[in-house]
Length: 293
Ligand code: HXC
Ligand code: NAP
Image (cartoon, rainbow, N blue to C red; front, side, top):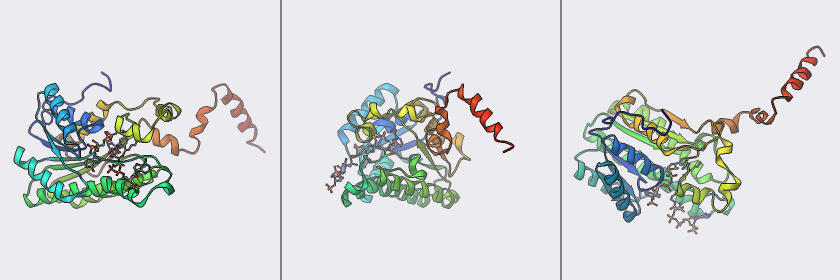
């Protein structure tokens, strides 16, 4: 058994209708593929319909499942409402909203125009709000129970991070929304959870966060105690569990999947890892010698 293996039983998502925003590429595509393999019907949405169509076709061929491509810019509430209606028309219902769409790029904050800052906030925070509000209203109005919202945040949603300030600000808002609605909407049978991934290489993220030779200069695997980046299947395994009925009692949780990366940056003495094994005998003697002074 390996972390790249598929975790859940074959029919784990049978009968579920899932919407994955930003499902045409990267992690959204990887999660969609696994949901289809587990028997779900999945709508993938983003701004680029041609990309969505080719992803849907590829995934349908690979999995034998049903994948519906729908254009929708999550920044616009009207487009989100239209997308929801299209999903209901195609599948008759929707059970899961996976807020995965995002925008991000590295930049010193003082170099950002007001519009640049807004663009990221609008995709990540306002987009997640738009989808969550539209789907939540629908579930509450139709008295549908057992619905799930799963949000993709980042580990810097709670620590913050330099050079990606709009993204950190927006993801922190999504984290607050996750925990708030987990309580408020539980009475309607809506569970709200989040995943905070560490580094999982994708073209979308790496082109904007590690452009040029930055990917070699700042090898993300070196920042991770487990000394590797994430594999898409292990994220898909976690997402599938969190949208399945196996996690029916999990609500308001934010699951970090980062090999220990953010804690390594946080622990005050974690840098002592650089001390070679043989030096510890000397250090221990020095410390013990000070005991009586
Ligand atoms: C400074 C920039 C910029 C940059 C864009 N802008 N890129 N400013 N540095 N590198 C400015 C533009 O000049 C413009 O401001 C404003 O931002 C909007 O840019 P547009 O190109 O018009 O926006 P749009 O076409 O809507 O594209 C949105 C985008 C783009 C966010 C800029 O990168 C995108 O489409 N991203 C989607 C995919 C993505 O980002 N994936 C990565 C997710 S990774 P002005 O003032 O000139 O009009 C992630 C977490 C990863 O979220 C964590 C890893 C560990
Ligand atoms: P990605 O492939 O670039 O995914 C982002 C998706 O969002 C794209 O499919 C994009 O599609 C869509 N999108 C962007 N703006 C949109 C808009 N206005 N409306 C609708 N869709 C929009 O990058 P990724 O790495 O897979 O990221 C997926 C998620 O994981 C994001 O939430 C990201 O913050 C999170 N994450 C990633 C990592 C990582 O290491 N990769 C780490 C932590 C968190 P279009 O361009 O076609 O619209």
